[in-house]
Length: 449
Image (cartoon, rainbow, N blue to C red; front, side):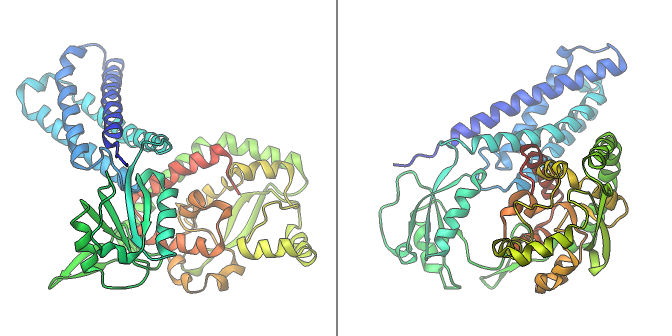
């Protein structure tokens, strides 16, 4: 017997949003008092807060954020940001047009607006990651498909816990058309044919027993977030493209790189100076390590890192791969070694927390890299990239990226390529924000390569 406890998740998110919005308006009120001095009281602000709270909660509900199952992080961040924007736009309009509200300070609305755009998405991101680890989070789903594709779908759902779709049973595809008793409490079925088979009758049969049916076909590791359904005389068409390659999105990403890299360089200057001293103190050799990498449009550029290896590391690597068969196989699979004997003491610590990559901020400032993007591949890897090269090398490589925060060093080289293509196809500003947030989490956990 399976019962979904959607109401528990919804109540938790709703309660946290109410408390957080109250804290945001209180903070905005106190900032206004500190900035402009006393002149209004919280009692006067209360009606404005109540109206803003009503607008935000209503928008969140309409955006499907309670409980928010089935949303990727990028989509959830996008929906929250849009809901906050429209909620405060309505609030500001009413405060401006409605006479009783005109005694309020407009600065309180603007400050609360800015704080909400930062802390509401961040809180949802953290809270959903915490709740997804509990046993009662999510809703049960059943899968109808053929082995091994159906099992791969189930494994993906178990891995991406935050989606909240918990597979409780996997049935053969032919079972989808049989009249059978529905699992108690299950309202969603996933139809996962391993081949491009007609499934219209199977979908109709499942729709009679389940509230919703998700068709999940096996295809290339390509676009999914920006796919647009098209209808042609009752025939379903799917329009997709590489979202990052559009001109508007390239401009948005470039502006984000300029602002973000300049701010990071300013804030992290003391940290960079300290690490430079430690590298110089630990072992003889230069502080920075420069390596030619493949950049946008196949151009070569010197990627900067803090030196984490002994001098003449490439020579040591060639000798190691000649004498150690296990190391050679590992390097050919992952293009790196888990226990690399060439790494220095400070270098091992820097790599653990990915701090050796901080000098790449300079590469971003120079326009050679992005804050977020595909992996910066070595020149020797061009042949291995193969057919992915014309797509991956049309954009700037990133300091961090999709595969770095999800796959890390345990992912094969082929998977790196697939995940880089996925990133280019599904790019959004919200996806970059999620990757940056996830990068901070990965760095703090010390999961670097």
